[in-house]
Image (cartoon, rainbow, N blue to C red):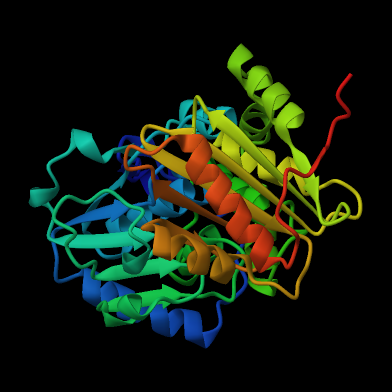
Length: 371
């Protein structure tokens, strides 16, 4: 102890130890980030308890950015913050993220939302409608890297549309501007959020993503990251992929592929299959659908930069009563089945996308030759 003083008290956030010193000096944030941070904190400081909500069935970017914003509000605004999500977390990597890192996020059904006087949305926006809040209270804070929706601009604070390939990037920028260094668990979550949403900095990546990725890397728990990226999976996972490959059909002379997976055991398997299929050589797009608890989930992936996936999915799914979100190369939606057979709704959705891609409707050609 220097000068015979008392040992410093270890600060914690929701039971997690906080680093007492910075190991690296972060690069100075730009003036725009500092300006937005001051506005964010000025809005937050007039409140006592913040609810930070992700979109339903959140991915790693949503989970990480919610926990990161909770950390920021707790430390920089002295506002008690709780991160929460609706739906389920079913994909193996996503479950491992929570299990390995013990992140302070809970299912929204386990808390009384009436106790919060500040509502924040991350990785989603009011008009999308894919989040679970019974009262649908207007959020005061909205942070999302997806294209801005008009309703978001009415919130007291909004940072929507980027430029960023992940919401975790936007939150990391605020932590840097506030001179807050996340502990290993949060740093690993934010790092993986950027990594997964930009496909290892290979898809729709911006300079801010690279900067935050490099800033977070020294603080990442590398062993934990490996356990998250390479989790054990249930037997149903392989059965789902087997069914997907058997059902996948090529359309438009091999320009696109569509697969209806039928009933799925978790909704996250749908975008995972779409992501895998779009890697097929010479393919322009992939579309996967799957039914889960009365809704049809769909996911679109593109290799064609002339088309905006988010805009296309919204145009097709809005008339069907679905909620949709996304951006340039990737988008998803869920459409209520309303008692109709899932296969019938999936067929209508597939035909709508084929027409949008100017491809003749029909059964298509099996991806895997039938033997």
